[in-house]
Length: 166
Ligand code: UDP
Image (cartoon, rainbow, N blue to C red; front, side):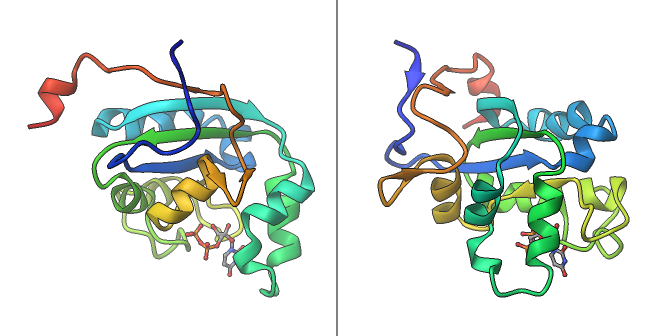
């Protein structure tokens, strides 16, 4: 009854956030979740998951022609990841700001990558780059699901909503 369909609700923005294998191995899961939790976004899905190669390739399909693509896929499947669906107004762009730029050496201090990483190929976290990609990564896209299956998202109202939203 409380399971949320993976199809997007009207007017709700969602982003797919993932702690990459280096973040899991380095004990940064809690630290990374905290950044989004403290900001005030709502967590609608969460799991520890060993990503298979074909899913990593599909997730990064837009980067298929890049020279670093094979290395990137190996990195993503090198250990478990933590998959998350976060919801809230403007959550996609805001999460990208919290995460910081792709190269951790140029990411601003105060961002996750700026504070916690030093290499572009070990940048601890992923965040969707557009609302459409948020839906592609969390939900159904061309009758196909990527990171979450039907029944894996939970519909719930956080009771602090009146203190977060006007
Ligand atoms: N990446 C890499 N080398 C590069 C650029 C990117 O290894 O020169 C990796 C890095 O882990 C990055 C991921 O590929 O997070 C996806 O690249 P994208 O440009 O989408 O960056 P993001 O959206 O993750 O900041």
